Image (cartoon, rainbow, N blue to C red; front, side, top):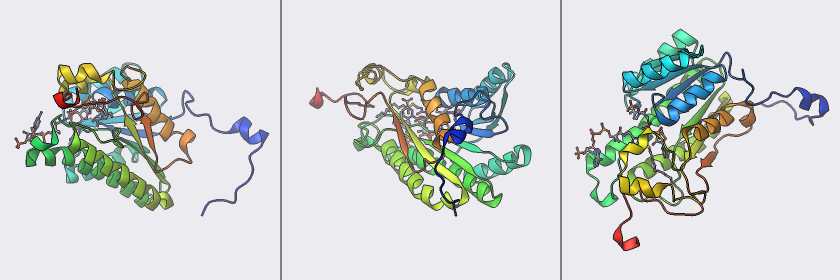
Length: 282
Ligand SMILES: CCCCCCC/C=C/C(=O)SCCNC(=O)CCNC(=O)[C@H](O)C(C)(C)COP(=O)(O)OP(=O)(O)OC[C@H]1O[C@@H](n2cnc3c(N)ncnc32)[C@H](O)[C@@H]1OP(=O)(O)O
Ligand SMILES: NC(=O)C1=CN([C@@H]2O[C@H](COP(=O)(O)OP(=O)(O)OC[C@H]3O[C@@H](n4cnc5c(N)ncnc54)[C@H](OP(=O)(O)O)[C@@H]3O)[C@@H](O)[C@H]2O)C=CC1
């Protein structure tokens, strides 16, 4: 049960924790899945610069090593683990190992994911299943194991799930839209269930962000992406990294079950076709 409320005054405001202080994450361990490239790499860098011990995970060791070496070269704290988020037992082992080595994690940035663009009518069974397994199942395995560790060690925690902007659907990406909508509603549900353990769960929904991941899209689709929002440009991985820090810091201590959309207004204006715009709509 929370303490009785008390009106804050000048003395409180003079001392209340400052978000984004240069050492705000010192002593914290932050796990960033998909941290070997793009948004995950930027997020790992930002947390490391704010004093955290970061752990990056992904399937490709080379990308993780490069990231960790670059961060360490600045005198900051980084480590990596190779782990496919679709492997339930492997994810359990990952969290157990990190508990043994670092005393567990304080923040999970659940960023790993991705898909391929294709009109839904052409999805093969395996294609649909692969994208759902990656983005819904894999994200869930990470969330659940983080929460189990926090509950069992009576420690508070924070999860930020990277999703996508789904309220109007995602033409050319129905599989990932379904999976991300699943993650959003999982998050809203467990934000309530896990509040008693001191666990906050939020999502960041990036619009078009210019990252290595853009290589998955055709030149035709990609060249229209920056016109799909009223700012008429791409966002950067750093934009998303800062949102992740905001949601993990004291700035968001009263925020849970929320989706922070970082899309340059794209949910309000513009259209986006992940697999290119069909002639019918031109
Ligand atoms: C409103 C704003 C939204 C903006 C969104 C637009 C911008 C979004 C950007 C991003 O998300 S950037 C990040 C992009 N990065 C990635 O997508 C990388 C991660 N992707 C992957 O690792 C893989 O694509 C996957 C989805 C995980 C699948 O990997 P897996 O190893 O399981 O696949 P396979 O065994 O190779 O194939 C399984 C199945 O899927 C079919 N498939 C795979 N690729 C394609 C393709 N390009 N087109 C059609 N089908 C594909 C493959 O053929 C297999 O099916 P079957 O052939 O067996 O039927
Ligand atoms: N860029 C954009 O415009 C948008 C991106 N997103 C989402 O943001 C997240 C980051 O994307 P972004 O940085 O742009 O692209 P990247 O492709 O650079 O990042 C995806 C990362 O996830 C890792 N990854 C993918 N699948 C798995 C898996 N099964 N297990 C472990 N790691 C995995 C990849 O590494 P490896 O392949 O080595 O495993 C890679 O480092 C993704 O979930 C993406 O879908 C959402 C909306 C828009």
